[in-house]
Length: 42
Image (cartoon, rainbow, N blue to C red; front, side, top):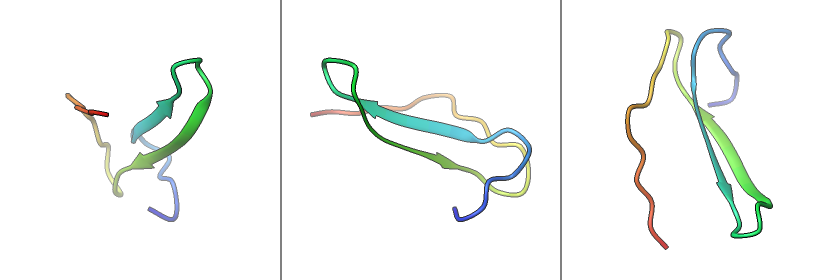
């Protein structure tokens, strides 16, 4: 999404095994958005 809304959004970040931030992003629309689960694998 190009512009962050002022309400609740979903924030996702990936860190290395040493805690270094690899990337981050957020998802959402014009209304409040919530995430209940996120799954990842190597």
